[in-house]
Image 1 (cartoon, one colour):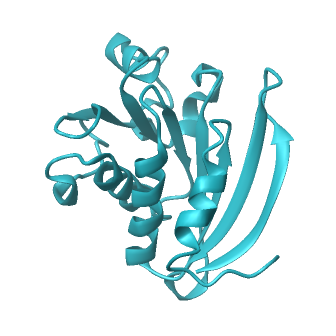
Image 2: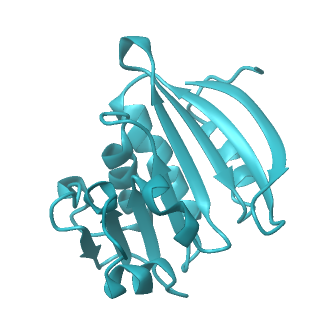
Amino acid sequence: MQRAGTSIGSAPGGVAVSRFTLISPDVETTLMIGEEVGRLLPGGSFVALTGELGAGKSQLAKGIAQGLGVAGWAALRSPTFTLMLTYHGGRCVMHHVDFYRLAEAPELPGEIEEAMNSPTDVCVVEWAQVWRELWPRRFVHIELEGLEDNRRRVTIHDDFDMLPGLQKAVSRWAETESG
């Protein structure tokens, strides 16, 4: 994995957001990135996953579940047709949501909005860009982009001050370089 760069900007509403970009060479590394994110997420976090079909959103969500200690994380699947799956057995409840089929919906189902705004649960949303206007004020946004040779560019926008810990964690097992 390569570190491509870090910068600081702001999100809508004036919240300071840091950005950290990594290059993941394979599915296993994408899972490891997700696991480290999951270990660092506080309860009440909203995680927006964006990227094209096949970019690795479900694999990253699986890694986040592992990092949260969710029982059965390896069997986690995308909730494309069920819209939301809820997992227990970790340090907090994890709601895994997929907005892909909700692009034309006039509104979100109430239980999904509740999960997105839970003060204690973690909500991980694939295809989150579909309903960007409903993201909570504080969020972690992870963009995934497919590159050549099955590699992925993983850009993490964070307003929970999680990135310093994430950078330290991945430096234990990843080659990094300035970008």
